[in-house]
Length: 148
Image (cartoon, rainbow, N blue to C red; front, side, top):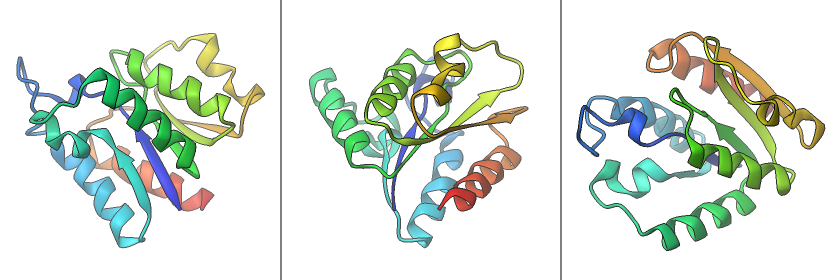
């Protein structure tokens, strides 16, 4: 199983910093689950060393497209505020007809282009109350387990 995790970057950074510090646990819990289950995975936050080693836009786009092409399951968190980058990745994943789990904030109104994804690909929407909680990580893990 190869999982692509599409998630906002700056939303997880601390204050004015581009470094993920306090919120790094969110990704580490997911990565621990991926590794325990011997999944291959793509996580740009880890790839870019939590914001310490950003890659160029040219390298990033190639890595992301190749990661999406290779994945068996595309897991997306559009974020709040909504991430334009994640939306682009969602578009690529739908163009490659990838199975998707899309985690949506219950308090956000999403574009019809997101809500209509089920017309293009195997897409499941899962709603959460507050992203940066253990409950939401548990929900993501449970949802992945249900589809593998």
